Image (cartoon, rainbow, N blue to C red; front, side, top):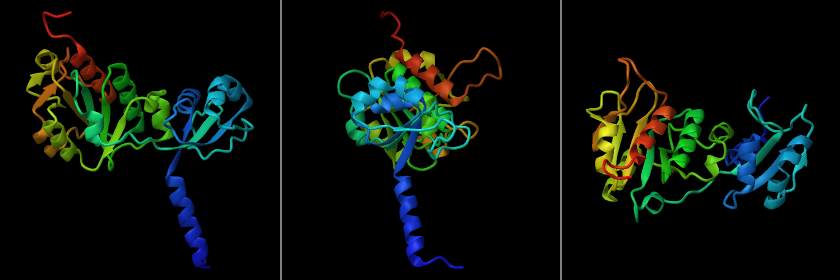
Length: 263
């Protein structure tokens, strides 16, 4: 039997509304979102145990929690999601425009650009490393990249609330804009002609954008062409390789080391 038009329209509206929000889960992700004044918080579901652990954050947020039975947790999470008795429905963060967020200003900012890195666990781990090493922002395209999700936020362990994660329409266009802003763009590639450790001291006082590609395919052809240098991480063995999130951490660390002769 064909559904009435009003039923179809209602279902479409429900799906559209659901797409505008996401559920964060896990104690760390929920706590940091609750205390983030920039985060639009819609609904908090917690067990009694989680509510006790999050009491201070809940009080500061002003959100009224819904107490739930841990055996029947009423939140639409993927099976296997380790929610630890806490879930928060939110709207995605708005980190503003590329030129505003990445304008060099004083100092030598570092950026991380992701070329079709779609695994939310990798992106979450990269956000953590970006925060630890003081990167100005992590930038990825709207398409073929991990969006804000509960899994990403949980892996980021709170960094999603503090570390800018900008989504752009076209990564190549963003790279060209960053070059006009004075950034040197380094693409990470196993066959890179230069070693990142050797190049880093010469760029210690300049804005740098590190570009990493998805595991397997790596950087796309146009992305490579837009890089100023293709660099590699030196490995002790002939077959060394790193997960993209580990490569991001190592690269950021290399770019924060002082130039030779300084302390």
